[in-house]
Each structure stands twice: as C-alpha cells, then as structure tokens.
Length: 67
Image 1: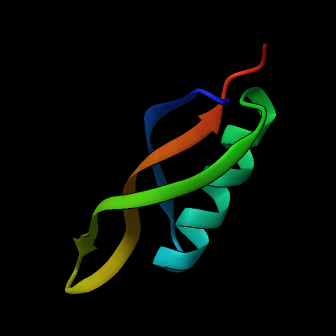
Image 2: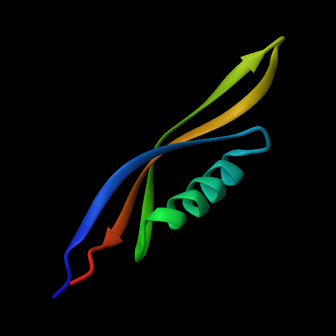
C-alpha cells in the first residue's frame, strides 16, 4: 500500500508554459522525493508593452510518502 500527498506550486518562465512546468518540477524535486505526477490547474501570462513577458503555471504535484 502507498499513500500520496498533493502540494500546490506556482512556476514562472520567460520562455514557455512547457519550460515553466519543467522548472517547477525540477525545483520541487530538490525538496520532494517520489514525485509521481502533476496536474496543471491553471496557466496564465503576464503582458508588457503588448507582448508576453512571463508564462506562469499553477500545478498540483503528487508525491508518494515514505514509510
């Protein structure tokens, strides 16, 4: 039997939504072990001078708790 926990994180990138997800998971992996998946709950952009300046994702990261 395994028990998992879900934590919400937000990540931002100047490149793309995909990069924001990659950076968020990479950073979460520094402190969370046994990450098994993530659900992208929300995505949005910041706009400056008529151009996209930042891509942001809010995600729920699932990780399995250790015994």
